[in-house]
Figure 1: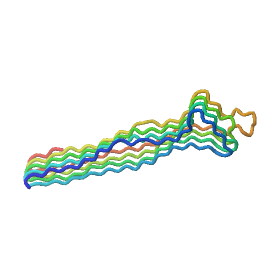
Figure 2: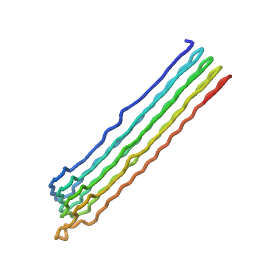
Figure 3: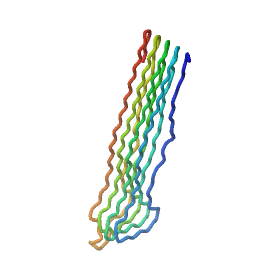
Figure 4: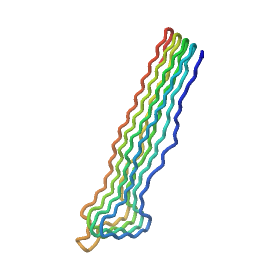
Length: 231
């Protein structure tokens, strides 16, 4: 065929979230530990590719666009009474994410070759661990821990090659944006370890938020022509 046009597109909706919650006004008593864990593992991989060629022209595009909003939450609701006589109380929110996007294309034409490779990956995930207002933990034999952990690895790659006898050109875009919050907190008027029994007073209190983000974007384009090459 004198002219060929090809394309590949991958557009995906946003992810949702994960929650582990003890509801408002709950009363819980346990001889051992009480754990509220909200954990999410995200493995996202999108690869699109296109090859086009024609005696006159080859035109192609490879596009992948994704939005990730995987919100992980762990919470003890307001006004709850939580007692763990001989154990720990932990509220942990964790997100482990590995997201990759890639677009590749090769275009060749006798007179013209035009291509576009676009990768856009946005991540707005939030990790939230919290004990709400007015919670009472009078009898806690071990420790109280509130931790939020986010470990995110986001990588995008775009590669395009255009070859023509006349004009060769292409647009290569690799873009990543990582935002969101990692929060661990305790609300107002929370009572911890107020028992008159010294064996039921919390041994330690830990409130920790840890975020580890690695983001990388790599775009490469090659255009070659006997006439005009633009990239």
